[in-house]
Amino acid sequence: MKQNRKILGIILIAILILLMLYSSLEHSKKGFDILYIFEDYETQDSKILVTGEIVEINHNNETILLRLSEPPYTLKKIKIQNLESLDYIPKKGDIAEIFGIKNEKNNITAEKMLFFERWKHDLIYIRSLPAIPFALYLFFRSWRFNKKTYRFEWRKENA
Image (cartoon, rainbow, N blue to C red; front, side):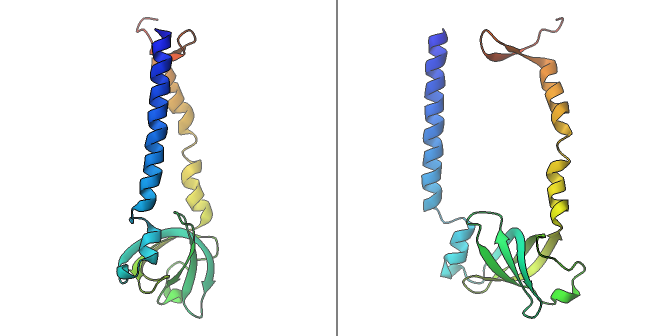
């Protein structure tokens, strides 16, 4: 019985690794990522949503240099009209979500923008930490680990 579980476990891990390899190889062939949109000349004047960290702000040219938070993690220049008239003036290090139109090969003209200070963006992850002990409590209230079989088992109701 234990031998069958080990063989099944090895087969399932091998299948998982093969699926991950297949997904990785096929993803590079497909053209649905941001790199494809930036480098493909036929997608000029297409709408795009980018998220990243502001690296540099040029108030004279009204442009922002943004480091993308998705692969290929490159720097992109984004043109913002009336940068000084925004409600929140972005600073270096802020996180920006920008919806705009790709004009040239590496430039985007922004239509809608959201800016977050870095600490507010990181606060999303920090405030989820107190939920971890509660989730573990709920899990271990209903399940227990069996050291003989190395599996989690449902607890008996009257135990």
